[in-house]
Structures are given as structure tokens and as C-alpha cells.
Length: 278
Image (cartoon, rainbow, N blue to C red):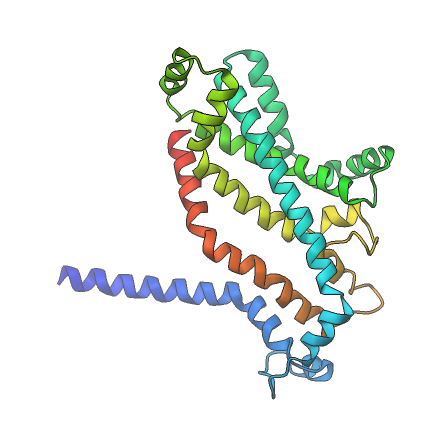
């Protein structure tokens, strides 16, 4: 009797989860459905299924937006941003975690401070600073800003993970004659793989789906805008190109969705390990 009652509660709980998941996915489902419709059908019957499945608008969107160039820009930004974060954040987190002084604590607080302040509070100052360096509208400027915005969270996560790395391993390496640099790259860095994988996934998705930062730094420079910014530019107070924007959204979502599906277990493992060891 007790097992039956538990099973009944579990089935109801599962049903509620499925309904909530469906509601959460509804915007994406509606975008997918309407991406196959002509504009008039989209406006008049937004919730209806398409009468026919045609990829004509997808082909038009691919050519109209010049998707190969946009995907190339977005890949460049994503790769270099993630590389910059993966190189800099572990070094900072390791050094600050192993140095027990008030100065190191102050520097650590200073690094993670942007996490505590809304981006809107300093985005104007950031834009003016980038403009003073003559980096506005350039790929280099956007990549550097993106690295700077991603490093605080990455450093925070890795800092907690490093505390779980046994100090005895490093002491043994020192006894064997290894330098601090050799110890970091040969002993510590390989042990950070779980949390580094999590950082890579989070920063990849954040950079691929970024709109605001690309608008602020790159603006409307067509040779440097990323995929999401190009889609956003199809909407204004005067007009909105829904016919091509919706297929474009689906095309831009597919790579990040596939990437997340294959990497989601690493995100859970990394976050869980960091929480336990931190």
C-alpha cells in the first residue's frame, strides 16, 4: 500500500514536471512552428500549425544574412574568448587560493566584484573606455571585453575547486625538484579538468548567444557583428522582418543546443565537484 502511494505521488510529480517543461519550451516551439509560415499566416494564425513544411525561408535567410560570415565571426569570438578565459582564470584562481594574505583576498574580491554589480551599471563607462583605446568596432576589442566579462565567474568557480586539490601533491613535486610553473602545468592544471570543462561550456554558450556586448563594442559594423546581433538588427520601432528572423533564430540555436546536449553532464559534474570541494 505504501509503495503504491509513493508511486502515485511520483507519477503526479512527473506529470507536473512535464507540463512545466512544455510551458518553458513553448516560446521555442512557437518560433519553430512559425518559421515555416508565410508572413500573413504567421500574423493571422500564430498558434496554428503550418499548412505545409517548406524550407524556402530558411534558404532565403541563409543567403540574406550571409550566415557563413556571421557563423565565422561568432566562432572566432567564441574560440578566442574561451581560450583567453581558460588560460588566465586558472592561473589567477590557483595563485589567489594558495596565497593566504589579506592582499590576495582583496585582489580576489576585486576580480569577482563585477559579478555583484549589474552589467547595466557600468556598460556605458566600459564602452567609453574601449572607445578611448580605439578598439570600438573591432574584433579585438570585443574579444578582450568578452574575456574580461567572463573571467570573474570562472575565477570564482576555479578558486573554490582549487581548495580541494591536496597541497601534499605540490609539496611532493617541489621535493622532486619541480619548479612552481612545472608543478602548476603538470600537477595542478590536469586536476582542474572537471571545473575547466564547466567553464568552457558556460563561456561558449554565453559568447555564442551574446547580443548586448556585441552591440556596445562592435555596433553595426557588418564585417564584425556576431550572429545574434545580426538577427536583433532585423527589428526596429518601424519594422520587423519576422519571416527571416524566425528561421535565423532556429539556425543560430541549433549549434548551441547540440553543444549543450553533449556537454551538459560535464556542467553538472563540474559544478557539483566545485561545490563539494570549495
